[in-house]
Image 1: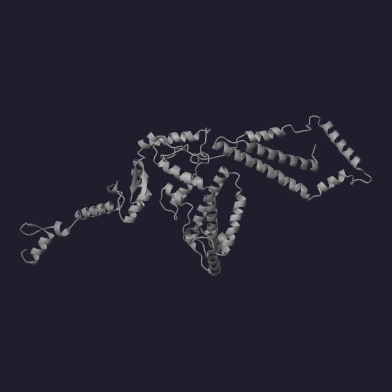
Image 2 (image 1 turned 120 degrees about the vertical axis):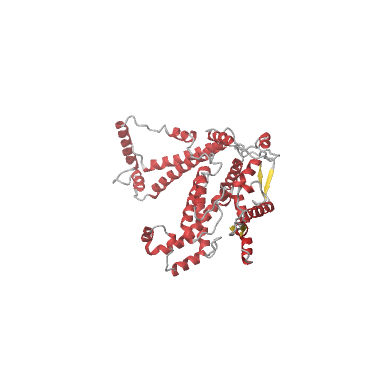
Length: 455
């Protein structure tokens, strides 16, 4: 039978209490591994969403916009009929209940499946989608954003490991590229939010972004946003004074037609949107700082691995069960060995096998050090070394392989230039002339004899 509003209210309060008890019961259990802790936080988040949804229904009932609750209470008080009493209203309702169960004899008085529903929420592991690179949320997967960056006009050719160092840093973007840069930042915010929701589902991002946005609006109005000081006043002035349109900002003519007279305002709004997204990215990176550092270390570690080792590691990360997680335990590592995929130091024999006990310095790379011969040899093809060679004005060719000293590179470059100069065609010495008698002279000798009148 349809429940009365009062019964719906009581049932909703009971349901909220059941959800709260389920949360307490789940949180009393200490998960043994990282993966189990992740599942636990997602289960708690689902229960909190259920509580929120039920609370909204309760609020609607208590607001009583259609006066249905008020009429129901009045009916129980016997105020709806003339001369009616409370007992008569009670017996009328009892009669209605009895007639309902006569018509529906198989109807359940108490929903026995309710407890099973709550237990099922605790027993089931929620489905969380991670890429192989993310390894159940241990690392960030910024490869798609990295490729967008190096292919864009505002980006530059750098290694993925270098990109992880600079992706959150501010950079000055020309007006004609701001629209593409804004789309790139929007994509970055979307990914970081998605990653945070999957790895830390109990974070209240709505409240966080509301606070960040409110502080940003206040600072923007006063022109105090770092890196954008005075930009708000300049944008307002530019909008008031701007009578021309930057055509490089738009890709097609249809966009100009759709925007019409507000096109200049759209150009000026980009500065504010970019600044706001940078503030959000900074806040998200602050929360994810440990995972970002761990991602950088993981990328650097993989650069020194053999292909077979990376395949074995990939197979291990695809396993559904992670036996144990020692992330929260202090690891004894007196030799400061590099960490393997499971967060433990690699074996000492493997450390020596790959020559990781040897450190190689490269002055051209800004005195950057490389652990192991493999990483050192590979770095000569990487962007950091190529950039250093360009700064010296030297081409990064095979002749400079294994050259890490600036002085040696410059000295070798001078020798190569001298050798190339000696091989150049020199007409005064190598161009030949023949006189009437068949004598052959080089150009310089021939000109001298001709000036003397001997030829």
